[in-house]
Structures are given as C-alpha cells and as structure tokens.
Length: 311
Image (cartoon, rainbow, N blue to C red; front, side):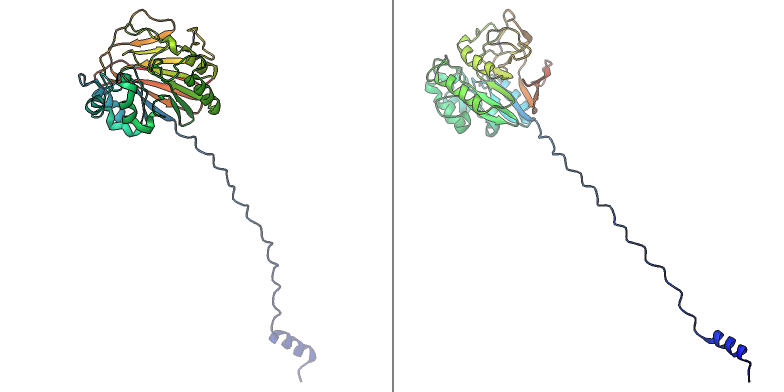
C-alpha cells in the first residue's frame, strides 16, 4: 500500500489544471466625431456689361470690327443709341445693324438715340429689339446685372412723352424705380451726355434733372454716346463740381463703329480722351466695386482701365 502522502501527490499531478483567470475587457473608447466645417458659400461671379454707342453704318466697317470684341467676351451687350445709321429705318436695321451687332442681339439691352428717332416714333428700333427695349414707345426701363441695378434712360427729350424735366413722367418713374431697387451699386445709360469735350455736340443740359435724380440716389456710373469719342470724367455732381465721395463717374463711349469726331476744349474734370479709336467698354461689376476696360479694335493701341468702389 502506498503511503498516503505519495497517493496525494500523484492525485495532484493527474488532476486537470484550473483555467487561468481571464483579464476583464478594456472599456470601449468612443472615437471623436468627425469635425464638419460649414461650407463658405462662394462669392457670385462678377457680372459683365460690354458695349458702346453710335454703331452700325453701311458706310463703315467699324461696327464689324467692334463686333469681334463682343464675340470674344461674355456678358450682356449694351448699346448707347444711334444703333442703325442714318435714319434708324427698318432698312438700316436690316442691312447695317443686323449683319454686325445683330449677331449678338439675343444678349443685347439697347438705348435709343436721336438717329433712331429719325424714323417716326423710333418704331423700327422698338420693333427690332422688342421686349429688350422696355415698354414700347417709352424708351426707359431697368434691369439687374448680378448685384447691380441698371437704369436705361431716354435722352431724346423732345421725343419721349413728357420730356426730361422735373416732374416729367420719366423723372417720376426714375425716382420710383431707384427707390424700389435700393441696390448697393447702380449704373445709368443714356444716349446724349451731360458732360463732354467733343466739338460736335454740346453738353445735353436738358438731361440734368434726370442726372440730379441719379446723384441723389447715389448712382455710381453714367454711360452715354452721341459724340463719337471715348472720354472718362472724374466723379462729379450734376453741376460739374468734382465730388470724389458721392459723385457720378461719367464715361462717353461713342466708338461703336460710326465715323469718329474731334475734340474741342477739354471740359472740367475730363481725365482721359481719345478720338481716333473704335472700341467697346467692358464693365466688370462686383458686389461693391467695379472695373472698367476700354477695348480697342485690332490695330488700335489706345486703352483705358481702372477700378472704383460703390458709394
């Protein structure tokens, strides 16, 4: 018989081992939530307006040359009057304007000029441009270009119903339109300029009441044609006093294709003048600022550019 101690030892060797204790699982650690940044909305692309006045004559190829500039640039095309020479007739629009600037008619907003009114009531002008020219027979209207408000006026004051004077239908409409569209930035367009140094047509003082309304509303820019030149003025009041804080910058762009005119004595506040280059003005309109660029036709070496802030 084996000793008791030996039996106990053998039993301990042959018995199964107790399982080793398992470690408690580590507590789960929550992953940090991904950081989501609020997307910053992209600033809207600037609007582009491009154009000129005094455009299509079958006796000149200037309109074909300026058309080439329009076709290379996006944006809304504006005219500054005297669209089809010599009389704004249906024949003039069909033969002279149609083959040239008529190619960009779908994106054009026009202004009526005195040559357009050589045909009674400028009827062919309104027929040709249709709704783009605003209410028929009136010749003044407005539209939006990006963040900007654009006002088109009728400076043919003896032809537009009620004229251009204080209290006229056009002046009352203008005041109401500007009040209804309190945009930060506004540009006005018309045919006859209040400010000009050209020798052919004197300043159109009959539009001063309309310009006073523009000034009172804080309008930034005023474009015109009529004199076949390019001229840029410093910001000024309706009476021609320099006003860098609230003044309107006036630019004459009568360089769309008709024969060019000479300058006379420089007018006060005239900064840049050219009377031998066809071309167009391109406006790049930001939310609170603008840039202007005069683009010469091929072969022209005159340019003008700059920037400004809205009031």
